[in-house]
Amino acid sequence: MKLYLTSFILLFTIATFAQTKIHQQAVIYTTMNIIAPEEEDVQNLQSNQEMRGGMNFRNMMDGETKFITYLKNDSIKTNIKSEMGRFAIYRDNNKKITTSIMEMMGNKMGFYTSDSEQVDMQKQRDSMMQERRKKDTSAKRTSLIDRDNLSTDIIKTNETKKIAGILCNKAFIVSTRFMMNKDTAIVWYAPDIKLKNLNSTGGFSNLPGMMSNMVPTLKGLDNVDGFVMGYTTKMRRNRILDVAVTKIELDKEIDNKEFSLPKDVELKPMREMRMMFGGGRDGFNRGGRD
Image (cartoon, rainbow, N blue to C red; front, side, top):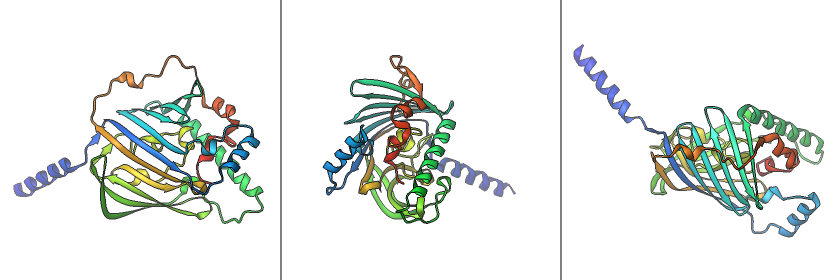
């Protein structure tokens, strides 16, 4: 009996120590590239933009975007830099609120939204898309499936490579989306790294709300057994999305001031931003897939 108890305690102790540590603090540097097809008719796109009478949000994220994500317990801040401007996204996981600060063309704007409001906005966008499909008599139709019930399969491989000095395993994410179409993405993940509140790369994939609707967010990343260090997937209009961590600093001490909202910006509800950009009809939500 004593031998049995001793063996059980030993096995329990080994299993406890073998569990992957969940890091509470980290700084992650990420680069995202959206690659447009070489044969794209730029002149035609510019004409369409002029006809719409505004910015061409469909292509505004093309090219390289750099991110620095700061994680400390339930607080996340992501700084974003691209040709179109600078952004800072603050996420409070306790209050379930996301605040977006934007600097574009010399103007600085700030908007906030709760998780429940984001759910309502997503339902509205989905409803609008379904109404458009019903009216589009030229399109072939199959049965639509619910966004919340999209199926995702993770297929692991034996292939490995180093990203930012960390050995990563390769996997495929196969997902079924609207119209029953299937997409396959390549994912590189570190099985020995897990971060609180972050399952992948920093960047857009961990940002709810407006910013995550500017480009497609890859579903299924939270089902990967480890921290996703990079991925490649297809976008609409023959674009390729390539995201990779360039540097990661685990357990780095971060001052709480890093997560303080700037005082020189008037913060407004997200619904006011949506009205500024046409109520979401041809704005930020056009970056994702149909």
